[in-house]
Each structure stands twice: as C-alpha cells, then as structure tokens.
Length: 344
Image 1 (cartoon, helix red, strand yellow):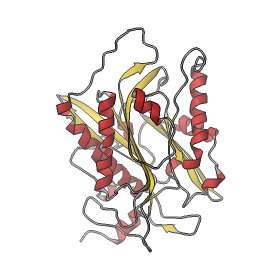
Image 2 (tube, helix red, strand yellow):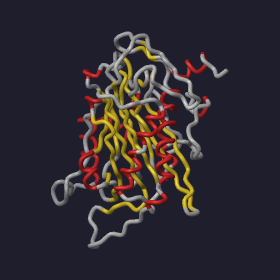
Image 3 (cartoon, helix red, strand yellow):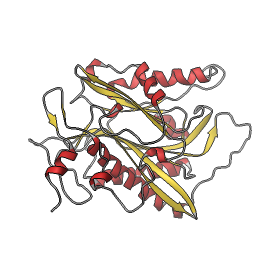
Image 4 (cartoon, helix red, strand yellow):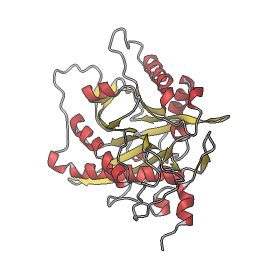
C-alpha cells in the first residue's frame, strides 16, 4: 500500500531516513499480529527498542498525556522513573490485560529473579478503541497473540495501514491504523534520527487538513470528535528523560497540523525513548553519568517530532484500504479520495 510520501503528502522540511520509518533508529524493531474475520478486525503491534534484555538494559523515556481518555498500562512508572523496561505493545481497549500478561511472562522467563530477588517489572501497553469496525466485546486478543507480535518484530520496512493493532482503526472518517515516518537530524557534525510510529484512531470527519491545504471530507452527518492516537517516538540522540518528555509533547504539534483539537473523548498519548546510553537495572556505581543535548539545541528534535508524527498519521491513512464496519458504515480510503480529487 502507498505511503503519504508516495502520494505527494510528505510533511515538513527535515529529510526522512532511508526507510522513512521508526526502524531507521538502529536496533528498533516492529512486529504485528492481525486478527480478522467473523466480525473481528483487531490485533497487536509490538515495538522493541533494542534486541537485548530490556529489563536489564532499560532505555530512557518520557511520556506526555495530551488528552487522557485512555486505559493504558505502565505510564505512571515511566513518568516517575524515566525508563522503559519491556517492549511496547499497542492493541484495542479491551485487550490491554492479556498484552500486559504477555510482557510480564516474557520478562520473568528471561529474568526469574523478577518479583522475588529483585523488583517487579513494568509492562507498557497502549490502546485505542476499534469498536466501530471490530467486535470489541469478543475480547479476541490473547496473550499468545501478543507473544506472536513480539516474535514477528523485525527491522526494515514497517507494514502500515490496517495491520496489527491498526486493523480496526479509523481517523477523520477514513480507514486508518498503523503509520510510521522518520526524520534525520544533523547536530554538531553528527547524524541522528528520530522515528515515529502511530496508532491512528482519532479526528472528526471533515477536520483533516492535508499538507497541500486540501480538506478531505467523507462524512455524511455531523459527528463528535472522539477516538484516540498513540504516538511512539524513538531516537538515537542522547536526551535526558525530562527532555524526552518535552520532545514527546511536540507530537501534539503534528496532530494539530492535521486539524485535530484533541476532543473530550480522545485519548492522545505520546512516548519518546532514546536508544543512547541505556540504564542498567542494578548499577554498582553510586553515580551514573548522563549525556544529554544542550537545551539551546533542542529545537531540531522538536521539529522532527512534529513532522514525523504528522507524516506517520498521513501514511496510516494512505496505506489503509476502504473498510465496512460491523454496523454497516463504510470508512473510505484516503488514497481513493486523493485519486478522485487531484490537485488542479
């Protein structure tokens, strides 16, 4: 399926990475488990910050709640301690529990001392409501499905659109789902990358604004703004956890460029982690050095976060095919609208 850039909807001024995906950040991998058929259109998407033991080698992170209408697990500890210690799973609202169980069991299998000789583990799961398309009450996602998404994780191009957790998601009245993009940053003579992966399920039909100024409107009747979007940002730029939260906050600028205003019923959450300088679980040293970007140089990652988020959402929309929901409502494909409404 086409990406936003394939259809002339690239965003911003910073150059994209080679894959224009979160996997442009070295060591980051993405996997999916898709469930479809018999009223089901759902799944799990996994993001692994690196290929080692995340419990023993945590990554620094910051989380920003733009609007808190959500049922995620694990954010409180990330906000408090500034680290991520499991892979990150995305799924539907009623499937957070089995995904969290899968992460806990996976961590214990690799670290039998968890909860006995050392601390417990903080599973990190985010969700959006795919109920308009998927029969969410079926609660079809299992811990085995979450494990399958984790096992599927790989580098290279990221499958986008109606796949994994994005199978049943919609945005701005169109079919949406998983999208990804990246931006290259040259700072002090060194090259860094920031990548975004979004689970797009937000935006009122008629509010979408494309980079070229067009406003696609597939709606038939007026509707309230509701839904959710989860934004996962990854970078190899050395940043402190406070700075990572500041970068995560700029994902909101990317959403605003698209026409979103974060309505009352929307759960909009951004998390940013860095693969630079992982944090060991049990340090023998009393003090740990932390490298971080000078504050007067942080505008570039701010811009990268906004641009990558905007384009990742557009790619989620462009890659997803038209779909009919469980109630009979049709969610058209943005790619089809673009074909029918070319620029003059």
